[in-house]
Length: 402
Image (cartoon, rainbow, N blue to C red):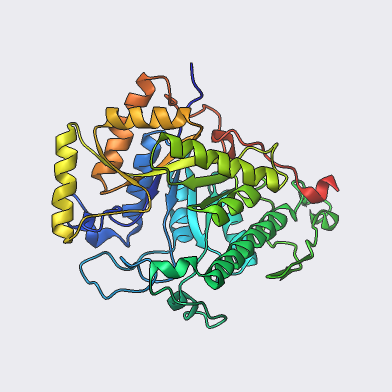
C-alpha cells in the first residue's frame, strides 16, 4: 500500500446517535434491551472487517443537556451495562474488538480489572475498555461518596475551581488505569500449572501483590483473575481538551479526538504526542482516532435531506461534540483519507441511525476504502487479538520482568 492502512471502529449507542433515530422505520426500539439486538450490530461490524466497536454507557439516564438531567420522554432513555453486553456478544464473534465503556469516577478499579480481564478471556483476546470520567452531581448522588459542583452555564467551565475539580477527576482516572494495568500484570503468564499428577494448580510465587498506594486508591492485589490473553487489554479514552489529552498521553493505548478539519486533526495528534513525551511514553505507540457522526447515502442530497427530516422529527437541529458528516461513502472516504494523511491512525464512526448508517459503513464505505488500498480485505487468517489488529505489542508482566 502507498499509505498505511486506516483503522476503523464504530461507536454503538442505542438506536443511533441522532436523538430521533429510534423513530426511523428500520429501527428496533422494542429490542434495544435485548441480547439479539446488540449481537446483530456487532456481527454487522465484524462483517465489515472493522477493528473494534465501542459500546456507550453511563451512570445516569441519558440527557440532551450534558450538565444536568432532563425530563424528556421523546428520546431513548435507559441502557444495558456495556461490559455485560460485550461479554454476551463475545462468544458469537471471532475477530472484532470489543471495547465497552466503564465510568471510572464512582467505580472500583479492582472490580473493573477482573471484569475486563474476564471479557478478554471469553473473547480470546479481543477486549478493551474505554475509561470515562463522570463529573455531574446527579451521578455522584447515586453513590453518596462525594459531592461534585453543578454546572449551570457553560461559562462555569472556565472557573478555576471547576478546572481544578476536572483536573483531579482526570488524575484519578489515570491512577485508575495504572491500577488496572498492575492488576492485569499481577499474575505471570505461566502462573497456572494445572498439574493433576502433583496436585499443583497454581505457582503462588508467580502471583504478585501490586501494593498500589496513591492519592485516590490503595489496592493490595493480586487480581483474582489470571492474566488476560493480551497481557493488558486495550485502554481507550475520549478527549476534547488539554486535561483529557493528558490522560490519553499518560495512560491510554488509544485516544478518540474530535477534529473539525484537516489542520485541526494534525494539531490534535501533535497535542497527544506532546502529552506522551511529557509522560515519558514517547517510544510507545498510542493510536489517535478521529470521531465523526455519520449519515451516509448513495447521494449527498439524500443524506442531507435525511438529516433535515430527522431534525424535524426531533424538534431541533442535531449538534454533537464531534463533526457531523452527511454525504456519500465516497465523500467520507475522501475526508478520512485527508485526515489520515494529517496523522490520525484511524477513525471511530458514530452511526446517526442504526441499522442504516452502520450498514452504509460496513457495506459501502469499507469497499470504497478497500478499492483505494486503505483498508484490509480480510481479517488475519490466524487468531488475532485486538492488540494485534492495532499493531500494538503484547506487554510482558512488569512483575515477571522484575
